[in-house]
Length: 371
Image 1 (cartoon, rainbow, N blue to C red):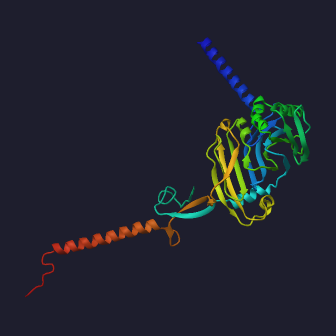
Image 2: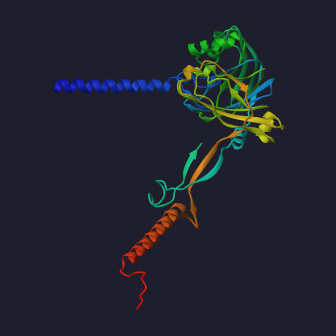
Image 3: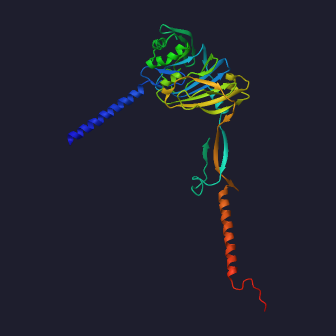
């Protein structure tokens, strides 16, 4: 028994140590997660993108993307690559842009009443409750550096490359590891002769970890179609969420789901008088705003970029209902009055029927005496 007990303890300890080693490995493994590019941290560091938000302006000739990432991990520095179909201009974006879009596309809130009490209403509970329902320099041969500038926490290099390995050489020269699978993922862009925006992210304060919402970056380039690069996000290790706001002359929607869940339109409408950061991006004339949300439960299934097309300019705004128990006279439930009144009428009718029955049964009732 003692020998068997000792073997069992050793097996448990071995499994426990293996589990710790597996967990530790997952903590230091780089996480390449980014909807329209690839985040590459320092060696033995980890960075992940919880959410990617982008506002896109397209006027038929020029496309401007303002991107904001919410990241987590333990990396103090990271690199990020975004393919673009033509020469790009890069600058810092306005953080207020996303707040303004949120206000413009906020759901409409309405109250609606229900008649019969629910589980949170009397007599099922002690009070009345409401329920809510809702609808750098090139590091290797084959890399051309078009430009390089420092923008806040970003060191931005605009690159051309004749093959994916050249981009890998550039990154390695600048102190970042490039996974082999990213090199392969870049090949379709190289074949189409796209260019690249390579960004080094580093907090302005030394020793600070990249975490939370990063400063937005604004990237503008010529494009005859509205395209949102997404192919590199297939390298992400965890489910991804994309929030995409499109400012154009008409309502625009993706042609396909490209391997994710069906894109959901949460707002579509014409903004007659843009102001503030929205006007700075789209101009001060009327513009159509389409807000999309999409989930990618399995990023490895992403097989293309988002190509957006014009659809009917049908307006849409999400409606969130607050359900309230129907009451009158300072909070008295209508159902109680209705049921109470019905019971009262039934009681009166019953009483009258009983009285009439008794009169019919009384001898001589209703007979006049002739004496």
